Amino acid sequence: MADPDTWQLTTRVLAVLGAVLGVFNLIISYRQGTPRFKVSGSVDNSTQPPSLNVLVQNNGLHPITVERFWLTAYPQNGSQPRSVMFTVDQAAHLPQTIELGRAATFSCSIPSIQQAIDSGNDVIGVATSDGRSKLSNQCKNLANLVRGRQ
Image (tube, rainbow, N blue to C red; front, side):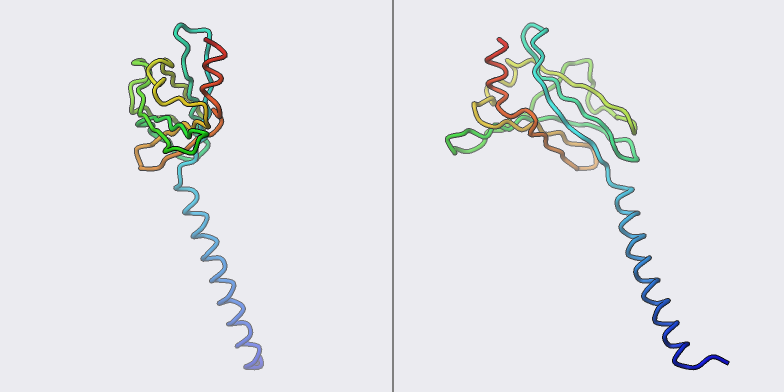
């Protein structure tokens, strides 16, 4: 028969191991249910008028539904940032579902969002149907890109 100290030690080790595995399982299950998507933007000068293209790529394990877009301009002079919601071309039909591993490009004409463009840093925002938002700061100095391509 085993020593009582051995049983106590074994019980404690199993309890700690169970707690650690339980926390690990909780983290994994939470991350699996979290939508993950990437947002990037670019200016397309091949169209007239120039357009802003927003690429939304679904990197998660579940489909995402894109509901709306906005552009926020952060002026370099330190004044209040300005945000404007913008509508994408009619062909997009928002809300639009993007399946896992897929990407979709949305575009809008630059004149429709010209009021928000500033010479500061511009951020594109995308909101999904589950209330999550994602920002892309890859369009820094969007105004300079637009001015240089017009």
